[in-house]
Image 1 (cartoon, rainbow, N blue to C red):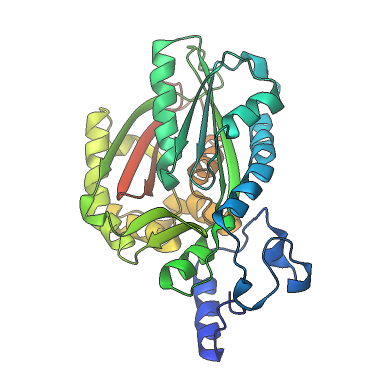
Image 2: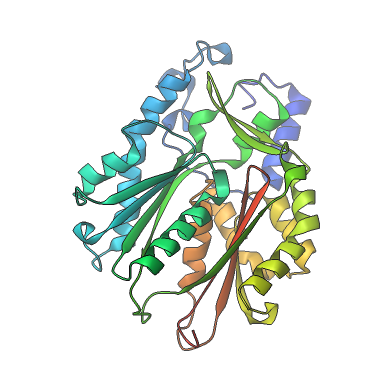
Length: 342
């Protein structure tokens, strides 16, 4: 960033300070350019200001080249030896960083040998909360069909959309976002010996934050707007959202044993701590995922959830409250728990 944005010494020190304060140590990208010298770049031209700057068409070609195989890896990790791909009845693909038709869903059908008559749908351009929207859809499907096996895969290649203008939005986006994929299987059966029941959902849109977080198409990729006011907006409204979500689902806050919060950034996690008067340790998993992977957009909440679910004890009543945020400003929540007492 310092090289491409031609920062002076003071600006470089400021950028280094921001990186050190981000809470992020590692991020991943399908583009090797970010860890190589200009002479070795294969996506960006090794010229001043990266001209000619890659077009949106070039970025979508890279998405189509890498997203499917990354998704397949996540799906295989999810299904393991428990469910064969041919048993999957529904496929929900989630992304806001690459669009085409035929798209990721059809690529996955071919690569995994999914049934030709599989029900498929795509959740596109919803941003960081999109995984929860996909969980909602899967929950509705499974309640209607007890034999359903709904596979969700969230795949984002955020680093494809680096922008060359040194605006605050572009600097913030380039500091936070990374690539990743996560998959989850939702079934309609009543066998809760190994799974975790979805207990409810609740979401709201905060119109006053509509202009503070957005994700728009441009000729040089997708452009992010990410205002510094977002943490303040979440801090002011999150406690009320949690109270309404718990009331809707007939659960008290005392029953919540774990918090699975999307680590959109360090300041967002700090805002939630203040809003709920939570000890920082309650969000340790969110901080850890942010540190190890950065913000991968939609897969990130599933990375957090997986770590928490792996620690739950099926012999105890344990409840996880999850939340993620995205353009709108949209706040989506879910509650998942152990089978005990459910």
